[in-house]
Image (cartoon, rainbow, N blue to C red; front, top):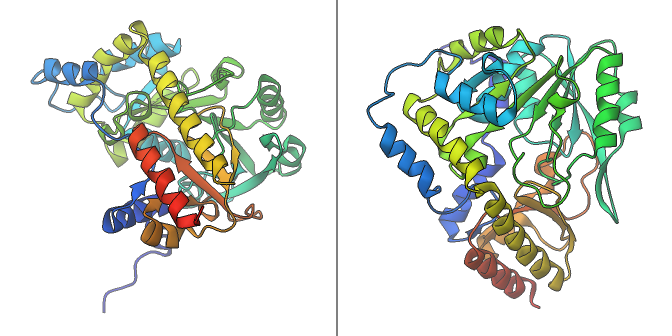
Length: 373
């Protein structure tokens, strides 16, 4: 028999999101689990792809197509040379894990925690240290005293997802300033996963790079902004002088993101800004969020209204998500998928509302039938 694979392959278990999507297809369930929009991306993005056809079909530089780096520089108000284009935000986070920490290091992050962060830290040899967020009557809040208590001489970086997935919490200015102060006091890198930067329903998420430009790496996603999650075009805005090293490690993983899609996103980003696309998207998602939240509350569930992202969390102690997808025809994500260290709130589930209103209404009807109300 050949040798066994490396022990790090223990991290290769199938994601709960892909498992739940597969089960939704198998059982004909409404998929409120995995966060991808239904239907086609906006017309102006598809028009941009057709217009760019045949103009960008070979390798780009590892740092990305110049036109896209320049478009993002204008959009994010950064210098083009600080931008690195990646194969989606997931690969951006992978490149940063490889660039910023290694064996013996610790990375602080909030729990509930998005599932890619811990294995990416582990693949770099680092340890994810989880700071519990509190779920109370007013929703989700971070425990920043608890976060500070977890900092050790081995702490290398602080990872902040804002708006936060799965909770939907948008960190306040005071919360961000406290975290920046801690990062400066302990000389920590800041990784700001801001893929939902344009999806908010109240307070505008403040880009962390505006508070700590010398130590903040911002991650973004065309897939989230432009409703094209399968395009896999993401980016990193790095502190001055550090983008070449990050791009250098990114090249050993994927070399460059798909050139035609980079060109289309470069053309589409200014259109999205100039035509009010993001405002319309927030309005549409806000209406769908209220439809889902109101329906869940009418069924007796306790719902936490998100400040951003396209997810909400709810407490449904009587629901087993694995039985629900098979016997109730609705797919949701169990709260346990976002926990390893802390105690999962009883009955916690995450639901995606980036689906057509008709699908949300059908899911609510099925839930009502399943719960016997």
